[in-house]
Image: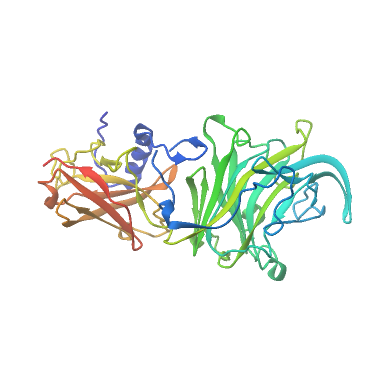
Length: 422
């Protein structure tokens, strides 16, 4: 299929067209738990990760969580959010079953030292047992569903007892409010951006799917100066200090501990009503923490499913290769073909221009040919993809193929094949 579009120096127009054409290329990510964008678009190849901590919840049925890894917080004081539950350390509210952790919210009157509540649930933390600084934090969950139900997988700075909240920092890897069964949120809180003013984004399942219908994976990659939020392997938000308001301070630079909880009611989700069914259960398949041997900012050239052929388009004709270096259909004065490459893991900060990315082609004799980068911009609606527009040089005219790669902030991507017309 060909779509003829006049060449434009307006990269926003080009980005919009790429956005329209992406479904044509069937961009389906390789994700566990379902199919959606066969290109593996992770932060970097999984070989760079090392598992440093995990809980697979494979204990005996009915057993409590591993006390060497988790502490069950206890209390019913509202937890700063006007929540209704009393968090207990009972196995009635948190127990292992068939390879999963079950966190159960029960409608029952419970009298504790700090008051009486009409619901019980569990809130598990790794504080004083495991508080890493940086890494990939991942869980696989099946969420509950109902008005006033609020499951979360998140982290708090381990200095909370000395500096307080929000100065300690908070990283909400996954939050869901029950009245939005298809939406999860990834958010950070800190000095100058907390509560309703937290900074983040949401991710919505397609086709009215609900997070309570199946297990889904949720993760954050946390490294110096950057946080990347994922759902089912799809990067849906990248945050850096540049995303903070002018009064905000980036405090994600010290150890944090992990939390898993299932709240009932609160300022944000509202409160249970006649439609809310109890008990509610949050199922946790695993929690895993990885650390990286290489940075997670390594760019990834997207390739076609089952091959190493780059996902690339002629920037004028919007056709896949083979590409002619010189084309009479080119609307630029030099008539050199421009090719749009699709790249994951290029973090663009405000004020960045094309100089943040370089590109090159390698021929079969291992000769390197620089490619002039003329455009670098995120694809609207696909924030994890950057379009990189390159001009093909004369040196490629007599070749039938070349291996292209890009470099961003000193990190080089994989090589991917483009076919050429000699």
